[in-house]
Length: 163
Image (cartoon, rainbow, N blue to C red; front, side):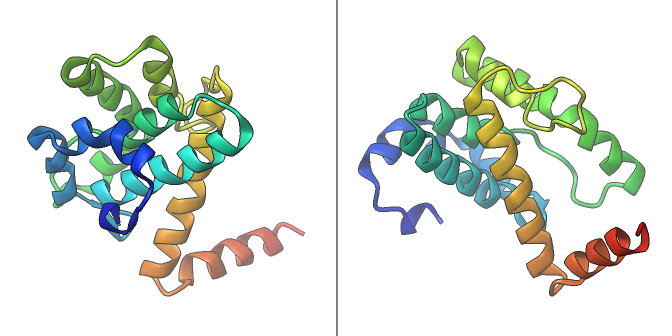
């Protein structure tokens, strides 16, 4: 994905993160049918573009988007552990980002709230809302492609069953 991005300004903002060996380990973790690095780059870049268009802090958005899922897991873990990481990975990613990249309080807040509404604390910043929305949209897209749109069909079925 990063090789397909021609935006030099974006690359200058996130290069030091993408060059970090520890950060690149997330590329070995399966995530929504892709790997966590690929997913994080997409969230970062699309959120950066939207934030730039809206006149928001696109540099913070690019960094926080890239670091929003900065945690390592065992791909063979049990479903129970997987469900638990759904609720606590934002805190772990934030802690890792603080430790390894000395991020700002704003970036920390954005990372910690990107799982809203699954985590009940809503984003404090507009940039956080952008990342949260882009993350959800990409997750649905990635899972849908992985399962050849089966997930979307199930979602439509569940929505219609409530009527």
